Image 1 (cartoon, rainbow, N blue to C red):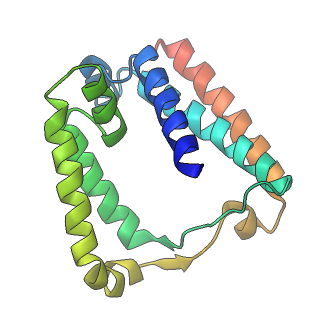
Image 2 (tube, rainbow, N blue to C red):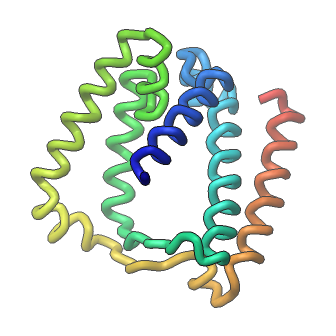
Length: 174
């Protein structure tokens, strides 16, 4: 059943990617050049909705959170690889799959790169775990845990911050 939920939510997410036009090359380039914040707004919206929804489900006992350990080294290295791939190809992983669904065959290069990268990661994980993952390993932490408060004040603060950032983007015509 979990696979069916995943398939359905994946199809809905792909539909929304296409409707928001974030799989367009001009939107990707605009985001990389900080001249078009359509993708940033789309992703921030997804993060806010997902964060609120997951914590509501968690508080209702319908899901259990599984926080991954924070490793500054692994996050920095992963961010660099992700950014290079996005900059070189013009698609991030999610938008590459969406672009292929829209009939853009050039996205196959990105999807192939994702598969190669995932395989490379899986094969080098034991080495990475004993090296890169230890650089700045902060353990399984969350922002509310760091602040020593309930998660809802943090969520409400982030929602307010999101609304302010969204308003600023709109004011600047981004």
